[in-house]
Image (cartoon, rainbow, N blue to C red):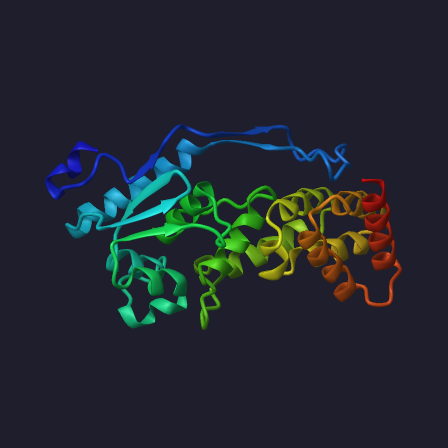
Length: 276
């Protein structure tokens, strides 16, 4: 990034202790029917970080403004713009007035207004990979949604308060964008629902408490008449920690108040507890 040194840039806007890779070797084949072992994505995290770095640098050069805020997510540091970054939260809206900022990220507005450094840590369940995608989206990058990343992005939209109140354009609103993908692509395909359910388990309780994804996925599976997959998911649910199981049981009760599904899952959980 030598071109930006005259602006006082750091060597990179995206720094991590070591390069991470996530397996993405198999496809979304319909032959994979088990909730417990869905196909896993293989993602080179450097590609999304390079996209973000490129866009931050481009914006900096155009506006003659260096990154002036540091955000820590896990072991990764993000060098971004402060007020200028806020404005970019209105992706593709141009230079919007600062007082409209809460329409895209109330969380970042609140926590970066008077400081230059911020750490995203629990209870925010957001990884560096997800924050990279979200931030690149804010800088105008195309966000490629898949069954493997839609849950983390949908949850991030709520945790970062990127709900776009008053905005109906799906392309410019992270919550609407992920919701549209879930309805059009995921909830009509049993194999994709299985993948999303698996992601929901790893992001409990937020996956249910922020977007009701567990209950909606189970409901979608019953609508596509994949009862076997529902049973497989419940088998996974009964080995969850007690707090997460309560969240799942509540989701089942809310979606199926007069169904024997709740009785089955609670009964199975009790039996597993007795065995253990």
